[in-house]
Length: 211
Image 1 (cartoon, rainbow, N blue to C red):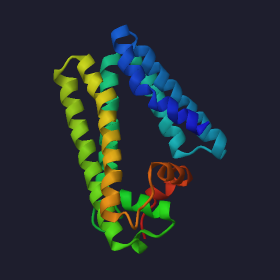
Image 2 (image 1 turned 30 degrees about the vertical axis):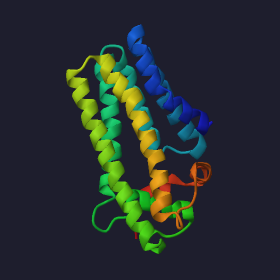
Image 3 (image 1 turned 90 degrees about the vertical axis):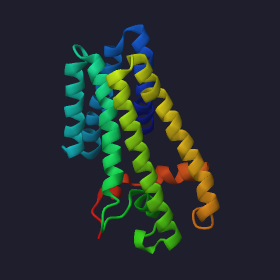
């Protein structure tokens, strides 16, 4: 169920992009509201209690549902900015003094090690990589905002919902090649192994305060 839900979320940008020339932007946004509502219900049923995530999903589902009918274009343009701002903040905050960079924390979970026990080369590399992703999300957010303000909606959508994801994928693939060259002896897993390890990671550990 979680994998299917993730795939459905990934389909949202394309749904928005193709809904624009068809004149069905509101329907694509209602689709997102439905996914958020399903996520809220799943959170409640799986954990048997009301969690902060449940209320966040429910709040966003309600906001999207209420605004999708009357302000579809404004809402569609605002959602990516929330995503980029959240991702930028998540990576940037982790680079603060006394904190574990997000990619470093992620690498430690994938290796089953405490972040402080990672080889120095890996710590330096993952900190630099955290900075790169931080800068990328900032750049994509700024470009998305400028296009939202000054470009036709179709051009905004082409960049925000299609090209930006291609850029993210290319950076991801490029990083694998650079990683093998710089720290390959410490982080030697390829795409297949990475995805297998990714499936076993408990992401909740990434957001717990470091000791």
